[in-house]
Length: 169
Length: 293
Image (cartoon, rainbow over all chains, first blue to last red; front, side):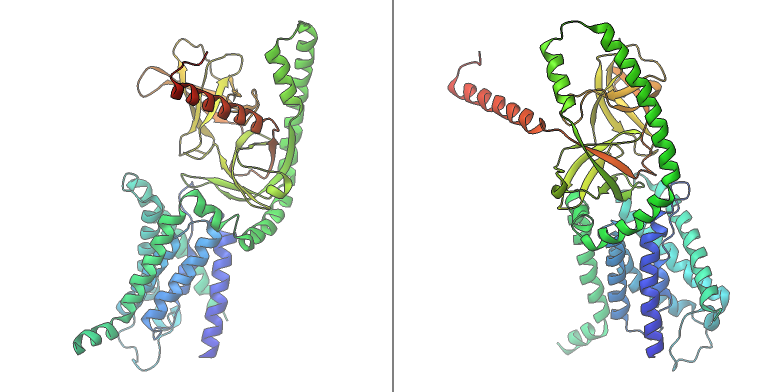
């Protein structure tokens, strides 16, 4: 339990720093920017209270906002992410999973296909919301769409890489 | 009543969600203007500090590139200097009062070197944060130039950092002219390509060719006249067809900008106070019913 908490705090700090110092400077073709910090919401234990999911999402977004100059955009998005992630996790969780032990989402407990589908669902929703809020109008909807698709693809790559690294140990 | 409380207890997370979303959107609406950006950047010294350390690392890595740019710029300036000196010798006429004033103004310019510590170059409303503030003598509405030409205008200042609105901000509008001609217009960013902007309101009888230099007009008191801004890459019509709209390739590459200079013009205050005085006198004359003589 303590180990899980410490490891999640470590990921939290790592992901915020990664976003502020590296990912925020990546703009492939001026569109695709990876937003891998939602990996933190993905790997929260399945038995985390839902209000804590939302609160952690908000704090994560606020820190991302402070370091990336996007006041309110990431906070609003990750708060919504905190609401949606448990639902999606429940949707993609293995059917034969024992209800009594907490589900720690990873490729170990969920297999690659289920975990990637779960990650893709969260990422695409997250990116769509993020770029809609950033643009804040629908006149540039093709741009928003390209942004969303490009960034989602990059983010999923990052998440898959994180999973590989995390399960190496 | 009990069912109501049960409902609240069961869906407590949803109320947390609504509350935090409300906070987020308050942030979004309140701080997405420049005031907000400043709060999150210049005023947030902790973040600025981290950015500063990071940027100093990056600028060290990019020194080679910057050096090349500087040498190139230096050669260009030397050539220009030679040309100007020759022109000055040839001129030798009695300067008019305006010319004397202008030379005086240029001679007293002092530059404050600064480094860009935060640079957003992917949004519609870009801005830069530089590591010099009121402590070093930077005040709002000072001009900022870099190795590639004009960069932007200081908008807000903190004790050690300042927020600059670059040309590549949709809200930015810079009075520019084509070198060698007196027609001037306002330079605005297109919103897409960081290197492209357009110059509006150039009259149709002006003769402008591709490759001509666009420079500051000096009408704003922020920049002295004649500073390099970019080059004309295309001549098109404005949307109402009444004037030309020039496509300008900017001299500054905002994606890699590091080292800039803030132009500290001591006459800005004087010019502004003169303008204010004139406006005051006009208002007084209008109030008393007399036309100003």
